[in-house]
Image (tube, rainbow, N blue to C red; front, side, top):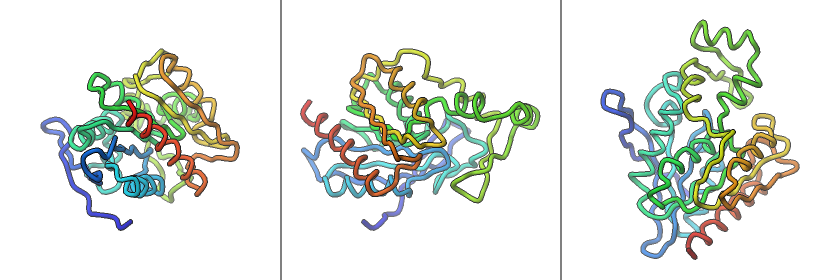
Length: 265
């Protein structure tokens, strides 16, 4: 499927606006069923293999598909170092509200899983979100996976003193810059450790060999949803990316199942 040029929308409050790149694929028309909304991971963008595979799947199925780049990611405006979870949630909501006017299934990868949950909670009363597929969901990762688990006392001290720390990346030559703003803002959006109710089916796909989001962390998210219909699949040889052909097929099956279920309701 040939990649189209993105549209640009404005996100952010007055005085802090930024241009967000969006790729929106229209459905086949009336009766095409629920659409899809993709949320990428930390330092990832909408041109990644999973995002493109989802768009191709939507084209074959004839349903709409919306994907976007967060502030400081991909083709969107703004600087990565200046942004935080609040900004990325704001970006997601702006893209969703402009392009997803009907029933929608959210698909979030890694940090996108956290943003998807926050978006679903914020928009619960609209009734538009009919299902969520979470791929290695990194809920609360700034606090639980970074600050508490991976950061040494020296790293935490550097962030508090200097306001930033460069974290080497396993996926890029460029290091991640972790800011004090990112850590402190993340604390305003923590969802683990309490009971949540999304009001729609949730499917979690998690690799057992994931070095970035341990499978036990994904289980904590499932346990936080006691009132919802949750399906948790642990992939024994799966890593964090879950981008192998067999992984992409598994994601498509999970998405198709929720689309079919949503269409029946």
